[in-house]
Image (tube, rainbow, N blue to C red):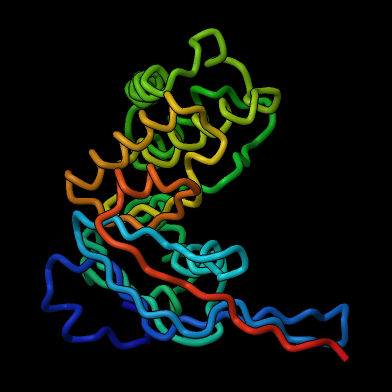
Length: 250
């Protein structure tokens, strides 16, 4: 366990997977005289196994910023984020005080993340991009690639594209590859940043079904969903976020 203490109530509740308390984020514009832009005012959130919490609010309310703090991409300016980690002996980790090594480990084993955009190494095939999270866990390469093919087929990515790098794919195809890569390892905690934003109605429904299946197997999910129908299908509750008032520049 890292240096930050873990709430005893969090430890006692075996269903609770993720706890955020007072999460605030302020960005400093160093090229504009150190102006500070508040993005999150201090958010509290508990997420248990089998829950899907939909973050809702207008543009600029900090929904994606909160997800990135939970994932460790952004270091919160204030507050704490605690994670249940059943893959290690200590079983608990404070994300806000974790080492880079621990962050990488929980991303491999505990927290899956689907961003709005696919960012991959050029010239790596789609099949290997999707299989990589399993290979990183020690799954044999052929078995991981076979599982990746099952995910791509379910998400309607044509087999003729599997051996190609996805840089030239359509936005919807890239997003489906992104979803397959983010969900294939069946992490116990999932963070989803508008996973269906680039999809047509048919594929949006398939992805919604996959998210519901993950929730039913016990995943703790926090997500941003751009349309109301998807939110109604996948979410068990909502967390409302409001924009932080930004001070005027001098």
